[in-house]
Amino acid sequence: MDVVEQENAERQRRWLKDKKIGEGTYAVVYRGKEANVGRKVAIKKIKIGQFKDGLDMSAIREVKYLRELKHQNIIELLDVFSNKTNLNLVLEFLDSDLENIIKDRSLVFLPSDIKSWMAMTLRGLEFCHRNWILHRDLKPNNLLIAADGQLKIADFGLARDMADPGHKMTWSVITLWYRPPELLYACRYYSSAVDVWSVGCIFAELMLRIPYMPGENELDQLKTIFRALGTPTEEDWPGHTKLPNYVAVGQFPKPPLRDLFTAASADALNLLSKCLIYEPRKRISAKEALSHPYFFALPYPTHPSKLPKCSTRQDTPPPLEDENVKGKKSKGRKRKLSSPEDGKPSRLPFAKRLDFGPALSPRAL
Image 1 (cartoon, one colour):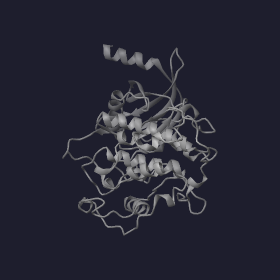
Image 2: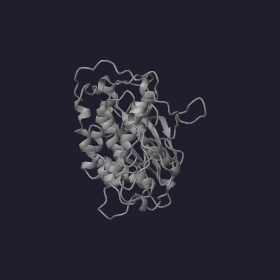
Image 3: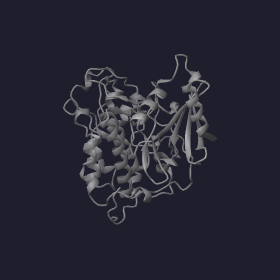
Image 4: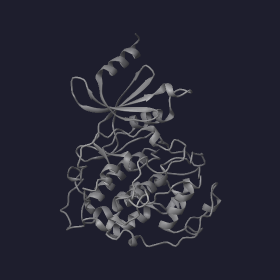
């Protein structure tokens, strides 16, 4: 046995698989623990044998970027080892995800709670962008929650380095409900602004407790966006009619955000609007968003340890590859929210139901 094989065998013995907690087309996730220590981990077994041309690119990306990114608000890759025809990623174990928390109707969100989740998301994203990495699949079930309440960005299977200006990138990324209009129009030259649009959609979802703009396909997604934000003009977004997949989908007036987000503060609506600007170059950056007045006004962000947690403890595996877009058309998240009337996502303004009680005392994150 050579040195590399010996080292791999030692790594394999260090991590013990326990219960299977998730399975996708290309990967299985197990709850596991570290031998002799007992620390809980998630072990993501990627089935290399499934790919004719070698290792799946999403696995390569995930290992590459998680090795590079060490931050409190990004999931930690603890180890990597191979076993026969499988590649195993050992990741820190996390209790839940933001999607589960949003869907748990027993929980009541305070404005300070939403502010805390937003701050942690933007801190993790700003660190990615500072290191020239695009995530390209931000959504609530890719934002995992640790036992201490810390939010961590996960699933870097669609991430990539920011390209030099003029270098083409694929437009078929980001789950549909969180995909910006430039990608829906097949723009091949884009920036970190695509991730910020996704953050805006997540921000809205935290306030509404339902997906903000849930389209059924690319065309319907554009219509849903334009109904929510108004149809862009050349003045709003110069040059968008020249994008490869541009199609006119009707003229919709721009409704005031206040009509839907009735309980939100003026600062919250201002930040939301800056995340959802049509012109990507004018969209706020993650770094600028962290300096927005929203984060410095009362109530201050809830300390992570005091944030709402799901009423039932869950074993939440790292997101699996087939929950990504993977170059295919995607209808939002794998698990859709439903309304009793027609099985489609409800559009009721749940923000009206939030408990916006007295301002809390300042609690730094």
